[in-house]
Length: 157
Ligand SMILES: [Zn+2]
Image 1: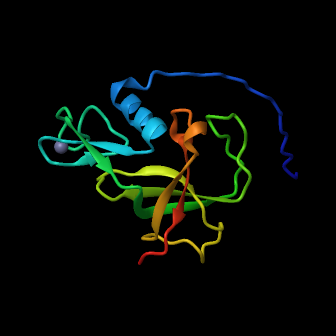
Image 2 (image 1 turned 135 degrees about the horizontal axis):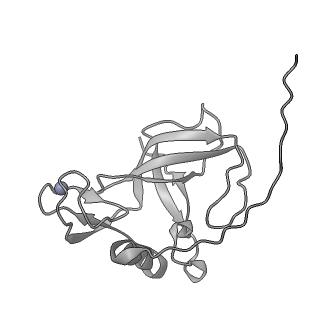
């Protein structure tokens, strides 16, 4: 017997909001108001987390020193996405295909995941690609990670 797949379409609308907390709030406010990235440095191991977290993920002590982070970084990994995943900030599905990646900004020891503005073609994107953050124009920034529109290649080796 041939297997029949039955889909049940439904629309689920769940508006949701959570408190960013003091560290992530400072990060988002600096991004929104000044277009700058800040990480937080562990006083024990020197590891810089960006986006900032209260506690060092490596040695579990309270982070303390704020450090400005470059807009330039390195693509550490990526996916060419073919599923129309829903953007949690807009509730709208992304137009596919698109490139999504893990970026380690210069001066940080942790990474951020975001859209990569390259053609979604495995021949045109690679681990190690140098990229730069492209921000929303200042007057249009809203104080969340969508203030980073994407990361774009900068052509450095
Ligand atoms: Zn540490």
